[in-house]
Amino acid sequence: MSRTRKIILYGAGNNGRYVLFRMPSDSCVVAVCDSDPKKHDTYFCGYRVLDPDSIQAIEFDCVVVATVQFAAVANRLKDLGVTSDRIENGLSTGLGPDSACDSSGTVNSRRVVLYGAGQGGKYVLSHISTATEVVAVVDGDLTKHGTCFCGHRVFSPEQIGQLVYDAVVVATVHFEAVQARLLSLGVALDRIEKGITEPKSGVHEGVPIQAWSYSPKVSIIMPVFNRENTLNRAILSVLRQSYENWELLVIDDGSTDQTVQVAESLAIREPRIRLLLGPHHGVSATRNSGLAVSMGELIAYLDSDNRWHPEYLRYMVTRFADDRKDCGYSGMNLIDEEKGEFRTWVPGYDRAQLEQMNFIDLNVFMHRRHLYAKYGGFDTGMTRLVDWDLILRYTRRHVPFVVRAVLADYFVSGRSNRISDNESFDLNYERLSARHRLNSESKGES
Image 1 (cartoon, rainbow, N blue to C red):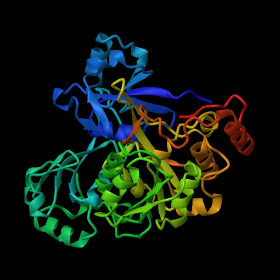
Image 2: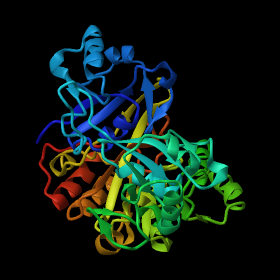
Image 3: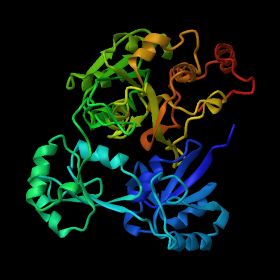
Image 4: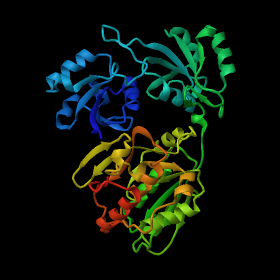
């Protein structure tokens, strides 16, 4: 089994974004840095952007440079003590499959104008090749002009004549109308390309083109037990999701504090929240109670002491537009509030490694309902390792996709009221090991 490589990504720009989403499954990005001081302490794909001088305090295997100024960056890294064998050119190592470098080290890019600052535009941007430079974004909606879209300022289509480009990629289903407008503005017909097609029109180059319009209901399962101090934070993170077609099932496991009152105060104002009350039966039975009454096509889980970032559901749901995908997970921050420490966790998928330890956290794992119908819910005969057991069952024949972005915060301190705390590890592991035929040395929890 190969060891996971710890990567620092250098470059919080377009090239960095595409290198990040094409990172091999054996590589985990532990930090992102950039030489631009204006980007420091901002967020890039969920990562806080650091000053390159900070990397000396980080444990890593190599720095992947995602900028065309590779030589200059490499020299700076060497000045910081990074050896040459730990510096890689992300634009010429295959991370961007369509990227190419000439002898001078610059990227031979194709310049495009993106027409459409909406969900279709986000979809096209997320799948565009590393060798394609987006020189501008335009949109026919006057209210969007002058605003920013995925880091690009939105212009009026009338300004296209002032730009230097190779093609205009139309990221809206109203292709014919947009094409006619572009032709009237002097854009040649052979330079107008269709970025997406109508919903449910199939697959283009192996990627589901209806992803931007796919909007199934997501059932969110949240078990609670004496979490009055953190429940509000968790539920608010659901309410702040940019994706709106969800239901939240808050299942109380016999709390004796003010947990139920906190949940009721939020549920009374939000019809998408359903509160289920019951006696104390443990985390497996509690989650199963929620699964039994859930109505969503997709199932997600959030513990009452963690939180999602606003784009979590939207990023995950978009990947399920490909009907070949049945489950997947994203990255997250691991936060210790007591020590004031945090680190990012975006592991690639490796079945052999998963059988050694559970590196997929349930808080960022999502699956289709039919997996629950086929393989069942949580094992009520186990009091620990139930997450690992379910994930092993669901991923055995259904390889999960990985969204390489940090989309949740997992709090590792102050967790004394977890439903599964202080249960016997060894007895539960024996049951898990027998079911999945695990190696006797595999005893790891994430």
